Every structure is written in C-alpha cells, then in structure tokens.
Image (cartoon, rainbow, N blue to C red; front, side, top):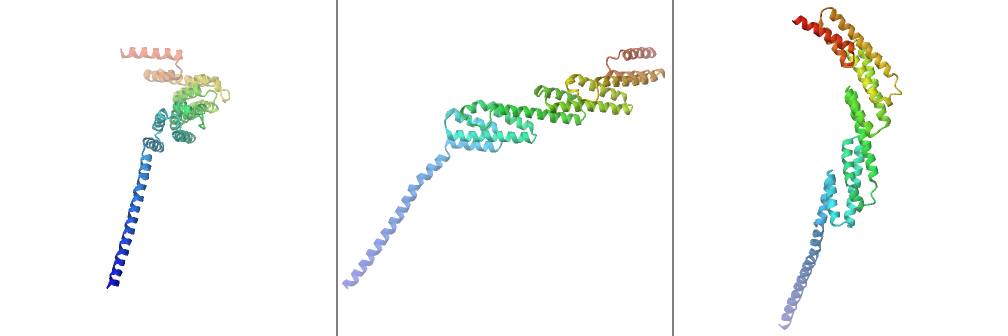
Length: 302
C-alpha cells in the first residue's frame, strides 16, 4: 500500500516539474519577443523620421522629372544642416542626374527641354557649389551647353522655315543666330542656302514668265544680301546679277502694262504696274505711269 502511494506521489511530482519547465519556456519566449519589439519600433521611427521622409520625397520628385522641386528640397535641408554628409551625397547624385538628363536631351536635339534643365542648374549652381564643391561640372560648362542648345534650336527653326519657303522668317532667325554665335560655320551655310534658294526661285519664276514673282524673289535676295554681305563671298552670283534680274522683270511688266494701256484697259495696266512697285519701290518711271493712268481713268468716270 505504501509503495503504491509513493509511486503516485512520484508521478505527480514529475508532472508538476514538466509543467513548470514548459511555463518557464513560454515566459522566456514572450520576454524575448517583447525585448525585440523596441528595436523594430526604433527602426521604424528612424525610417519615418522627418529627414528621411524629405529625402524620399526628393528621390520621388527626381524620378518623375520634377527637378525644381528636388533642388528646393535639398536647399531647405542644407539651410538647416549644411554639413550633413547624407544630404550632401543625395544632393550631389541629384544634380549629376539632372545634368545627365539635360545632356541626353541636347544630344537627341530636344533643345528646348535641354535648355530648361541647364537653366535650372545654372540658376542654382552657386548655391550648391558652396556645399558640394566636387561636382563633375562647372557653371562655364553649363553656359557652353546652353549656347549650343540655343544655336541648335535656331538652326532647326531656320531649316523648317526654308523648307516651307518662309524666307523672311528664315532671315529674321538667321540674324538672331548670328547675335548668339557670330562666325558659326553652320549659320554661314544657312545664309548661303537662303540666298541661293531665293535666286533659284527667281530664276524658275522668270523661266515660267511669272515676272512679278521672279521680281519679288530677286528683290528679297538683294535685301538679304545687304544684311549678310560678309557671308556672300563664296556664292556663284553677285549683287549686280540680282540688280540686273530685277530690272529685267520690271521691264517685262512695264511692257505688259503698256499693251493693256494702249488697249484702253487702264485698270489692267495700273494693276500690272503696281506689281512692279512690290519689288522695285523706287521706280519713279512706273510711279508716274500709274499716276497718269489713274488720272485718265478718273476723267472717264466723270
């Protein structure tokens, strides 16, 4: 009987010991998890801090091409913490990326887009150079890139104007291009192209007996010859050739007008002679002929 009781007591004690051991393991596991939790909370607090949030915002703006916003964020950070190396590194990367994107746009002939980016860099260069002196580019390089973009933009517009035969527009653009890039060979080539095209158009109209149109082309070529005189040395024709062609067109139209005048078609004669003044406004002989014909027409009307 006593042995049976001892056995039961032993079993009960073993069960109690096993239960206590399991409970201790659970408590230790919970303590471990509880102790690890503050570390995770601290990490989360670090990621979501004000500085990290602003840097993340700057990276997002950079990825979406909002470059002005990017630079404003970094300037605000530098005003608070000018020696912060983390901010310096992030800002340096952003500036280099903006310069890279500007270069890519310039190489692809997207000059307006490239100029916007270069201008933004140039506007903010002095500020960032004070805190990031080891940038891979300087303000002189940016200005040179801007100059190339402006010239490229002018040349593209000039080419479009010439293709559309908008010669006066092309002439104005050439003058502007010369102001920014005097002596530039590509501008010189376009000046020669303008004058050659005007002369060729005049010659073709003359061959088609369209003397009014021919006279206008020769006259415009002469006008541009005066504007770009120093760039005409390699042309195959001279200013005297244009003067001679203008006189020939004027004479042909004078004769046509006389034919109509002698027929009694005063209105027709006046219309033809007025077309001469469009390209030969200093022709006094034609001015007098028009005045005489108008007076006679008025007499007929009574």
